[in-house]
Length: 128
Length: 188
Image (cartoon, rainbow over all chains, first blue to last red; front, side, top):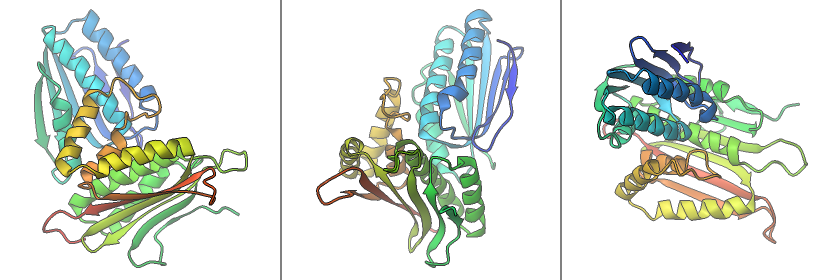
């Protein structure tokens, strides 16, 4: 699996996974009724890239608006995969950008990052 | 003629949006686009908007996922969801039939949540998220949905679960009422 883009829909975020720069960006709303279907290609590409290319650094940017509970579970798993890569030696930087008026999303970034033991995490408030 | 209807209702001055009808065929993207539009024109105070939207979508997806089908053997799942203004913020109400087996599960979960204070709700939410990979086969969100609603509303939720017949027959009617308070200094 190589680099890919998924366009945003009303209920799913735009996804850009770039193998060359080792970067994953998710941007938009995230409340699909079946997150497994939506997230599976992302996990597939990410896990294969981390295992085979073994990048020295990896950057993940999340600019999400509303995230439903089922997608929160998927994001928690995504953060775990990134944290494991960091534990294995890669420098992993995760950025969570939330709207300054959205405290639900701000808390979500905090909750997801609290499970990270190795990856670097930064949270920023920026207007949507 | 379709029984579905959506939009602003003039029936109650406090009600800003209502949808009732068949949730098996409702398009969530259409519904949420309509809700965001209503929130902007209503207008809903900025900091309350995210909390109101989050609980609204979670409650709508719960109906889509868990409502019992209507008793005519078809796929139709009738339900209703609405939100409006309260003196100190906003309210959201949903109503849908659920199977009796699901009703008991819901009651247990909601009673547990209602016994917690806001700090306990946050702790329970985080604990549930940490163990979310040991997935609950009946719940796609691993039980985070109701805890998330309780959390973003400070635990201000109440419910009713009643059998549809006096003898306790199927299905049960489930109503959920959630209060979303405006942030301090914000007027609803």
